[in-house]
Structure formats: C-alpha cells, structure tokens
Image (tube, rainbow, N blue to C red; front, top):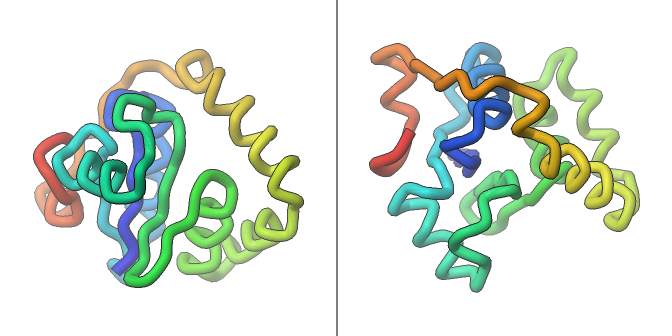
Amino acid sequence: MNVVLYDGDCGFCNFWVQWILERDTKDQFQFASLQSDFGQSFLVKNNLPIAHFDTLYLLQEDRHFTKLKAVAEIGRILGGSYRFLILLKFLPDFLSNFIYDRVAANRQKLASANCLLPTIEERKKFIGNHI
C-alpha cells in the first residue's frame, strides 16, 4: 500500500488529497496527516521534525519519497495521463526542493482553509486519528 502523509491543517494539502482520492480508482492509496499518531510515529522513527508539516511524504513498504519526488511517484502509481508527473523525478534535488519549498511556503495563500470532507468509503483510507 502507498500511504500519503500530509499536513492535515492545510487547505492546499487537503485539496490535493481530495484530488488523489478522486483519481485513485484502483484503491492504491491510504492517507494520514502528519499530525496523527501514525504521522508522528513516522516522523519520530525517521528523526524528522515533529512540529513542521510542510513536507509531503509517500510511504511504501521499504522506502519513502518526499516533496516533488513523492508527487512524481504518486503520478506514476495513478498511471494514465498522470504518468507525466514522473518527469519531476529527473529534476536535480536542489531544483526540485527549491520549487517544492517555494510552493510549501506559500501554500496557505494558494488555497482557502476549506476542510476535506471525505465520504464514508473514503474515510476507510485514512490512518490515524486526525483527518
């Protein structure tokens, strides 16, 4: 399974979680906020800051992806017309991190604080205690 870890208090992040949910026709993703017990456990286990939620993570069984590398892998997994996102994987780390960090720094301005209201079926894909 692929687990997307995201900032549960960010309207921009919640928009993209909803975007993935709508395109995940093969039920390949689960979700957990970085603020949830699951998210906090991941951060602690990997010696990552537990109070900074500006990074997207994609967890797989034996590895994890961050930032634009996570976006690229999500596109690859979704397949179809979203496979083009894999091209992000080929950007040098300094450039992809710079782009991601600029978006992350302005994410509150990029989207309203609308909360994700998942359906009952979609709720089954969320891990932890904080949506």
